[in-house]
Image: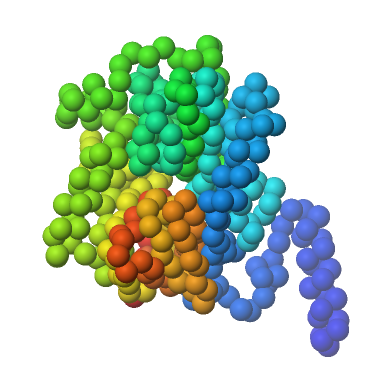
Length: 337
Ligand SMILES: [Fe+2]
Ligand SMILES: [Fe+2]
C-alpha cells in the first residue's frame, strides 16, 4: 500500500471507530509520556493589597443574603477559568465577615480549613463546637462537618480558606447540604475540647496560634531542627492519628530566621504559601517572587524552589498547605534535590 492510501485507510478507520465511541492508541503519536510529571498550574503570587481591596469592595456590594459566603478566590492563570481554582488539587480563597454578620450553616464533601488573618472574637462553629478566632489560629472543617461563621465582635474578620475543592470536583464528588437553621446550636467550646486532652482528639478542630507559636519557637531554638529546604518547619498533625492535618491536605508553618536562605528541591506535591509574618523571596523554577506579609503564592509540582528571608533583622513565618497526603496515599509522592 502506498503512503497516501495508507493514510486514507487510517483516517477511515479512525472515523469509523469514532462513530462507535472508540479511539486508537496510535492517535497519541510517538512521543510517549513525559519523563517527569507536568502541570499547567503556573507559579503565581497574589498581593495582599489586591485581595484586601477586593474583599472590602465586596463588603460594600455583596451581602450574605444573596451570596452564601463573601469569598474572593485566587485564580491560577494556567488553569481552565471555568472553575477558577488556584491549583489543580487545593483551592485558596479569602473570606470577609463584617460585624454582626452570620454566614449560614452548611456542610459539604470538600474539606476546608481556615487560617485567621485579621480580627478577633468572631467564631466558626464546627459540629456544635465554638472556635473563637484570633490571628494565626487554624480551624478545620473536615468533610461533611456542619459549619457556620458568626461575627458578634465589632471588628471586621478576615481569614484564609483552604479547600480540597478542585480534587473533589475532579472526582465528581461535590455535594452540599444546608443546616435546617441559619446557625447551629453551640454545645461546647474548642477551649473545653483542648482542656480535655486525649479523650477528645477525635473532635479536635482548633489549633490556637498561642500553642503553635510556642512550638515553633521551641523548634527554632534547637539548632539541629533546621531543615535544608524549609527552615524550621512545624507540621499540624491530627492528634488522633499523628498523621496529616486532613486526609487530603497537610498544613504547616515555617520560620525563616533573619537573612536565612534555603536550598532548592522539588517534589510531586503542590504547595500554597501564605506569608504570615515578615518579607522574603521564593525562587520557583526560573522566576523569583518577592513576598511580604499577607501575600500568597503557589509552588506547582516538580518546580525547583528555595526561600529567602529578605530582612537582615526580622524572622519571616510562612503558613502552607500541601496536597502531599493524597499523593502519598496514591504512591505518587516523590522528591528530588
Ligand atoms: Fe463551607
Ligand atoms: Fe518544598
